[in-house]
Image 1 (tube, rainbow, N blue to C red):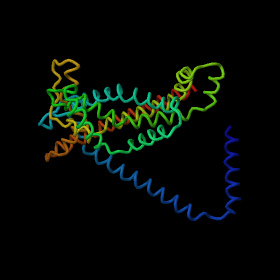
Image 2 (cartoon, rainbow, N blue to C red):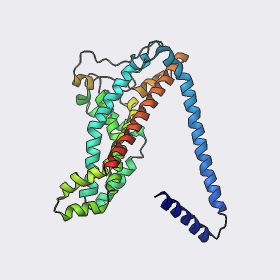
Image 3 (tube, rainbow, N blue to C red):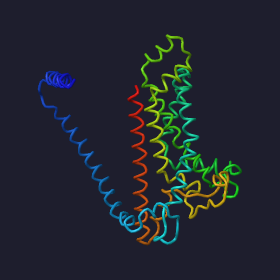
Image 4 (cartoon, helix red, strand yellow):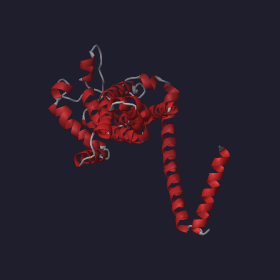
Amino acid sequence: MTDVTATSHISAEVVRARISGRRMDLGGRIFEGLLLLALLASLAVLLTLLVDVVSRGIGVYLDRGLDVITAPLSSDPARAGIGQGLFGSIALMLIVAATAFPIGIGAAIYLEEYARDTAFTRFITANIRNLAGVPSIVYGLLGLAVFVVVLRAITGPESQGRSILSGGLTLAILVLPIVIITTSEALRAVPAGIREAAYGVGATRWQTVRSHVIPYAAPGILTGTILSMARAFGETAPLIMVGGAVSFLNTGDRGPVETLQGKYTTVPTSIFQWVQEPRREFIELSAAGIIALLVTILLVNGLAIILRNRYARKW
């Protein structure tokens, strides 16, 4: 297999050289060099930021250990932590998973497997792709107008609508176009022969989609949904609009409904508050929070890769 691959690569190089007349493609070399330069510049900026954040925040973990992760918010930087923010972020992700994923995956399945190719369908698809590029602050304004003002009686009368439920629904709308697009692309990647074979043995459209198309597209669907959740986990701007930047989170003896309708904070909004403090201890604490946020996002991305590879091997 290796010999065949090497032979194919050599043959491709020979054909390319014969077509170009063995002349040096100066423009292509310059463009390739510019691309490499852009890559190195991006990596240099990323490495600089990572070194700065780690150098500022690692000392907090060395002094306090995991207390930074479990401690609640406090006006004293020596006792403050991201425990409440972590609880709020997890609660928001559960709402996103329970709303955006079923609706987004279902909409993509309908558009790709059931809807006819009409002007109206193409119009909807084009608008979904445009919505994926809308700035997140716009979704924050939408959440403020709909979930905080109009649906205040449902999202939390006591908290004036600025609740975990409002934040979770706002993030669900934010990632919904991304879920639809990634699911649609995964469904399009399924070979047409699989559908034709299922129809050939008498399977209905639903049986074909349920037993053949969705399992084949599962790696791409899982990857897209998990990565969209990672994006929602790191969002700050829309949550500030719908009440995420508060100074406390009181669960107490409240039930699930009261907790969802109560005030909240998240890891990104906690970091946003700390970086505005003039004291150096809060700056170091914000760096420690950024480290925890980056590690969480990397773990989520790693989970997406593992699930994708696991389902890909089955096919």
